[in-house]
Each structure stands twice: as C-alpha cells, then as structure tokens.
Amino acid sequence: MKKEMNLTAANHSTVTVLPDARDLAWAANIVKNAPVTSSGARYAAIPMELLHLPSYQREEESRVFKIAANWDEAKCDAILVSYRDGRFYIVDGQHRTAAAKLAGKLDMYSKILVGKTELEEYELFSGQDENVRKVNDYEKIMGGAAIGAEPASGIVSLFSELHVPFAGRGNRDPGVLTCMRSISQLYQRDEGVTLKWILETVQALGWAGYPKCYANSIIMALANFRRVWGGAHGITLTEAREKLIRICKQNYETPERFLSASKVKFPSASGETTALNLLLREIILDS
Image (cartoon, rainbow, N blue to C red; front, side, top):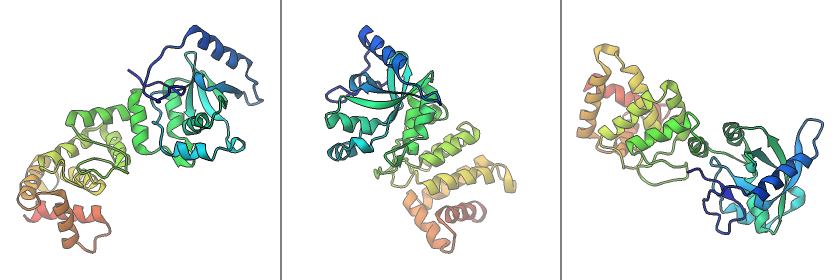
C-alpha cells in the first residue's frame, strides 16, 4: 500500500485515506478559481487538511521544529503541489508545510501543477532543493522504488533478493551499504548484472556484515576486477573470482584487513580504489 500522509494527522503516521466528496469538490473549486499567471501557472492558498504527501516523499525531520520556532511567513516562498486524482500532493515544500502547521498556520500559499503523473512528480521531487538541502541519492532511490520507477525499483529489489542492508550516508552501522550514487551508476550500466555479481562476491568472500564490506572503494574495485578479468590474461572471470575468494579467505578475512594491506603494499597509489585495484591484480597474477 502506498504511503499518503495527510498533514493534519496528529502523529504524522503513514495512512491511506480516500478523499470524501467534500474534499474532492473543495479541491476542484480551488483549482478552478486559482488565478492563472501569464506563464500559465496557478497559485492559491490551500488549507492544510487538503495537503498530502505522496509515496515518494521524505519523512519529516527534526529540523522542522527549528523552522517552526523561527517561522517568518515573509520569507516563505510558495510551495509546489500537484493536483492529481482530486488531491493536492506536495512536490516541494514538505518541511516548510510541516513547520507552518506547527507554527499555527491553517493554509499554505501554493503553486499548483495540473496534469502531472506520479512519475513526473517524482522526477521534479528528485531534482529539487528543499531548504538548501538537495534530495540525496538514498532518498531518490527510496522515492523511485515507492512508485516503481527504474532504476530505483530494480536496485531495491536486488538488495531485497540478496538481503543487503542499505541506508543513507549518515548511517555508520557495520555491514550497511550507503554508497547509493555508485550503486545507481553500476546498476544502470547493464541493468544490475555487474552490481549483482559484486554483491554476491562480497558475500562469497565472507565479508558481509563486517565494517566497510560495502565501502565505495571496494564496490568500485570489484567492478573494475570484473571488467578487467572478463577473459583477459588467459584466465576466465570465474577462475579469477575463485582465486580471489581463496586467497582472501586465507589472508584477508575481513574487508578492513584487505583495505589496510592495499595501503601498506601500495602507499603511493593515488587513492584507496587504485590501491585496491593494484592489490587485486597482484593476487591474480603473482599468487
């Protein structure tokens, strides 16, 4: 069931409520009577009880209370809403709206979009900048997955299939994948084939659950490993992978040991990923 949150709910919990006839008529009347600018944009004050969060939107954050405590209506631009299926969905302005409600406001001055699909709204949401903080890659993926948009839906399905825990970059729990931008790029390279191979290789190495097992440098080094050893140097990718797993289980039981060894062996490498690439090459060619 998709998440649709009415901002008048006391606890802001996830609910799905069908609009009643009064709300449908009220919303339709607001759209009908909204002044239209020369560019075709509609603007109107929309009551809080008619504003809803679509499934791709972020949950509210603690900074809402700070915004509410320092509320200044003169500094609040119009929020962006989409009129779809008889309801107003917030595309840009969720936190301002939540803060305004806490500050006691009963409506929000809004720019109204008409005729947008949920996917088109999500595309606007994923590119917007809310309160000088851009939507991050984790939020884009979660929002896209909520409405079945690709590549987000495929990425989340793959994580679920392989039982890979993932979160935003602020998460510091061991064994949690957070490098969502690299993941998205890898998935789009070949519809998830390389990404699945990388995640399965991390698990085959016995590293899953350890700190840094899904570090960006390890993910990218394994992506390069798959590309380089896909039939090169007289060794197949399967043979190279089997050798990597065998050597790592003997000498590098954890990803942190593997990372440390790469830095010790190749201190002049230009970066962590480069050092890992060199260590991987050494394992296959010299071991």
